[in-house]
Image (spheres, rainbow, N blue to C red):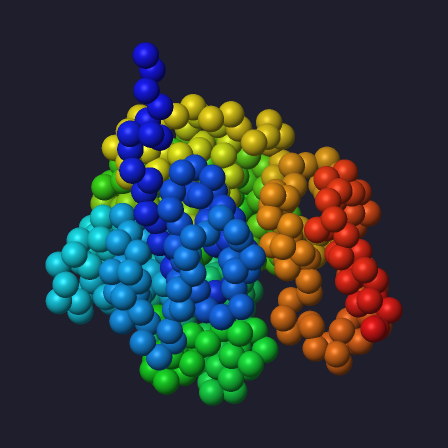
Length: 442
C-alpha cells in the first residue's frame, strides 16, 4: 500500500515578510498554500495579499517596531520558515538575529536564510562581487566609492560606461548607468543623499509604503559602489537552497524590462549552466538557505555570464513551477518537511513568461501577451481585480485625468480581456465596468 506523504507529514508553517506592496508576495503565498503549507504573512496596510483567500493569517508589519513585530509573529505562528520578500525585510531579519536574546528566534532566522557569518555580504554589492570573484565566478570590476575623488581614481583605469549602485535599493531604483565623469559625479551626489522627509512622506501618503519613514529618521547615507559596464543582455537565475546547497533553479534571459536597469516584465526560460554554477558557488560560500535571485549580464561578444548582484529574497519567478529541477516551491517545501521532492507537471511548456500585471501595464500592445505564458492568478479573482487597478499614485483624480490626456492605452489589452472572458465567472465582470469608468472619468 502506498502512503500519501501529505497525510503523514505535518503541513509546514511558512511566514512571508514584506515591507512593500509587491504582487510576487501574494503569488508566493498562493504557491505555498497550494503545495500544502500553512501560510501567514506580515505586510504593510493595503497589501494585495489581503485578496488571497488561501493565506491563513495576515499580521501587521509595524513600522515603529519592525523587529518586535517580527519576533511576535514568530511566536504567534510557530512558523518553521520565514521567507523575506524584499531587501528591507532581509535587513530586519539580519538585525533581529544580531539583537534578539531569544535562541529560538535566532535559530529560526539562521534556518530560514542561512549562515549569519555572511549576512554583511548579502547586504553589500561590492562585498558580494569580491567574494564571488574569489570563487571563480565571472564578475565586472567593482570598487567602493566614498567621494567624488574616488571616481577620478577609478577613471584612470576603467573606461566608460560605468554602473553606479546604492546598497539597499531594489527594482533598479538605486542603479544608474553613466557615460562621463561629470555625469558620474552628479549621480554619486544624488545616490549618496539620505532619504528626505519629503520623499518619506510622499511614499507614506501616496504609495502606502511607511518604512521609508525609518530610513528618513535614521538619516544614514547608502554605501555606493561602481562597476564596469558589461555590454550584453540581462539575465537572472533564481534558486531554492538549503544550508549552502542549491535544490532547484530557474534561469531566465530578460526579453522586456520596465527600464534599462529596471525589473523584467517578460523573460525567456533558458538552461544556462554557467549561471547555475555561479549560483551554486555563491550559495555554498555564503551558506545560504531559502529563495535567492542572482542578476547577470550575458556578454554580447563572448556569451560569458557576469554576476552583477544578488537578491537575497523571493523574486517574481520563484513561485512558477516549471517542472523537474525548476520547481522551487516544491523543492523548498520538501526540504522543510524532510520528504522526497514530488514530481509535479510544469504549469507551461512555453519558454516565454509574461509577468502579470507588469507586462501589460508597461506595454498593452505587446505581442507577448498573445503568444507567451501569461502568469495571471485566475484562481483568485479578487487579487486579479486588485492588480488590474492603476498604481496607487495614479488613482487620484488629477493623476487619472492627466494620464488619460497623455495616453489612453491604460485599458487592459484586448487579449487579456478575452482571456478573462474565457474563464468567465461573475466575479470577473466588475473589471470591465471599472475600467470603463476610469476611461470615461467617472
